[in-house]
Length: 174
Image (cartoon, rainbow, N blue to C red; front, top):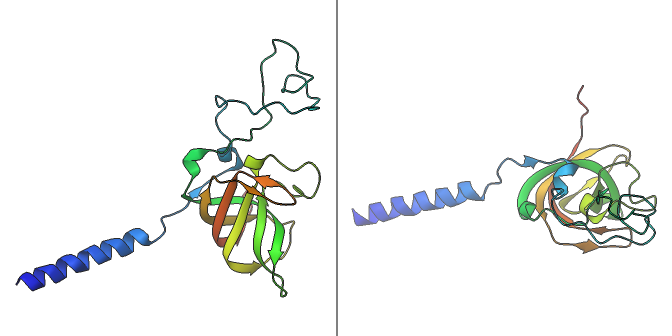
C-alpha cells in the first residue's frame, strides 16, 4: 500500500512539473511597453541633440526635461514570455537564406538608416529554429522569452535580448 501511495505521489509531482514547464500564453507587448515610465530618471543628455526642451546643449534653462525616448530597459520584463510585433533587420542566416539572428525594430527601415532607434526600442532576437524571411517590408509577431541584458552589434546596441520560439506574419486588422 505504501508503494502504491509513493507511486501516486511521484506521478502527480511529475505531472505538475510537466504542466508548469509548458510555456504560458505570451503577454502581448507594444513598443511603448519597452520604455520605462516617465518618472524614471532621464538618460544623460547627448551632445548636439539640437532639440530645444528635449535635453542636450540647446535646452533652455528652467525648461522641463521631455525625453523623446530613454535608454533604460523595463526591468520587470526580464525573463517574461512575450509576443511583440515589429520589423526584422537580418543579422545572421545560413547559406539557404534561413534566418537565425536579427534585430526586431518598431518601424520599417530602422537600423538601416542612421541613426538607429534607442537601445530600448530594439530587440536582438536569436531564434531556436531558423526561418525564411520573405520580405523585410512585412511586419511580424515574434514570440519568446525576453531579457533585459544589453547586446552590442555593428548595426546597433540593444537593451533587450529575446530567445525566439515563434515567428508569425503580422495581420493588419481594421
